[in-house]
Length: 187
Ligand SMILES: [Zn+2]
Image (cartoon, rainbow, N blue to C red; front, side, top):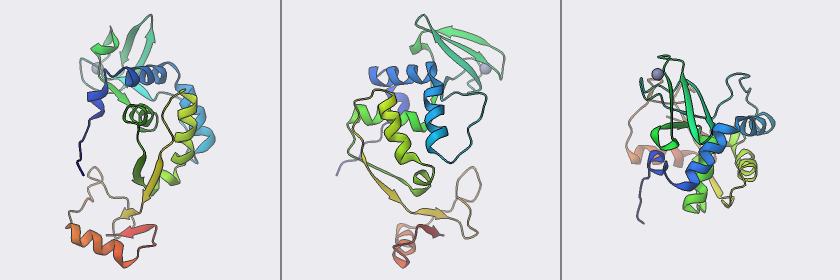
């Protein structure tokens, strides 16, 4: 098996990515309504945005972006700079749930592997509804949900949380083998 990692930023100029990213900037309510209906999470009333430009001045993703007359208009709430330009002139933040749609379509993906925490958030149905709402030709992929790995005190682990842990592959395999049917593994 050959593995090739592809960054989302490399796909910026792919016409399928461009189409879905601009659709997301123009129609945040399409995503918001699906999330409201099919997840058990509360949706912020404001701001409703699932894709915005990165400020070319301070490089922060904080503000609002609009697309009008084939131009991106970005208002940065961090440094106050107002920018405008073509789609290609900006980098973007794109929320992972709608971002999956162009990736599925571009690579014609058969199977996704993801953590069970995403299933618990309603991602399985959300993805199906987003594919339809985006008029995407992506096929609905089979999905393998993996067990959730938590720290010993039951916390989600992450670098930003400061509780990430480096363990050997053998150690990890042993954790899963001890209880293969568990939905949650504690490390
Ligand atoms: Zn800025």
